[in-house]
Image 1 (cartoon, rainbow, N blue to C red):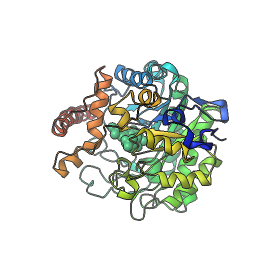
Image 2: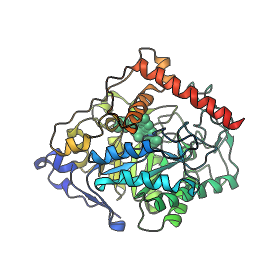
Image 3: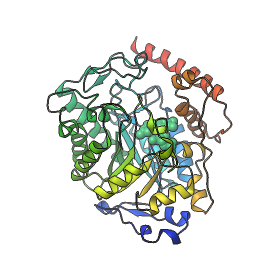
Image 4: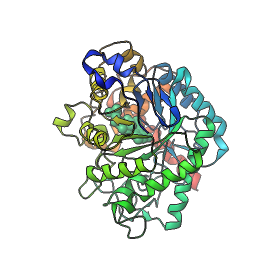
Length: 426
Ligand SMILES: Cc1cc2nc3c(=O)[nH]c(=O)nc-3n(C[C@H](O)[C@H](O)[C@H](O)COP(=O)(O)O)c2cc1C
């Protein structure tokens, strides 16, 4: 299965609006995205106390659909309510919230925008106030100063791994039933699938660890189980790291091999990212200046993937200008441009880019001036969560939101959530 690429032949004669405005058709299933702009997953943390989607999700995705977006991938939806990445995650493990999920999908599909659900399990990246004993491939704790906020995980038993594979499939089937246009496995950023891939985090010597083939088994089994659950013709993608940027971790050569395996397994879209909580390259933190100058952080790896496999490809991380987005597509490196923070700040970005504006995003590095505070409150993520919350409340974004004010807002929100979690357990 291949994407039809036609703009790549004459890059110099076409404007960014023309290049990015060209629809993309996947051969398998004849599935079409109306332009080349993809909203990459951003955890909305707008779920109800019972982890159902809310009217805020509907308003937020409607704002992106109205902004002219081609494909929206939801923030990570969790497969198990005992394993959360953050308070406010949506969880889908059965059909109890089917009506709310259906409203969410339908709000996001206005104007022909496609909506895929990103499906995830956090593994050990579940903070202690949410999981006192998270699960992971092996009992390897997180490092990089995260030890105090994340407990050492317990190694999963083989029968638990099989049950988790089935959970991913169940969530995918419910997404389809609710009207989502596709699903994406979250295989990046150090969550469970990514932990299985990593030789640092996966020290197993059974069928689920050891060689690359065995470390990749979890991702492959999830894909196969999802395919059985949703049938042919319903797209399944994966977001995967180019590398974990960690000594002894998952690297580019291995990632390329895993991508080949997934293509053999019938994956419909590969989205490239990088990094983990321990080395957050996904938001540019670990990226070299020479890489940053190319605008998209993982473009060089995307070019390697493009040369190796024939599958629709998206790239996320660092895109800030209409020129940069168009050149990644016109060079033939990728089919879809993945955008996160720029769309959290300016939901009408697609319409502006596609109408010919020489768009430059207002996304900037954020800091309170106190590094530890920035880190502890994950300022470069939480500041954007506040923007998503505003859109979810039907308000415009607030580009002038001060970093300290954002920190105070995050602490207030987390405080409430932490208390709520303790009550739920007690
Ligand atoms: C508020 C926020 C939430 C995020 N949540 C997710 C998520 O749920 N799943 C995911 O794959 N990536 C998540 N990311 C990472 C983004 O999808 C993206 O990879 C990263 O922000 C780099 O792209 P950008 O430079 O366009 O922002 C999140 C990023 C932000 C800012």
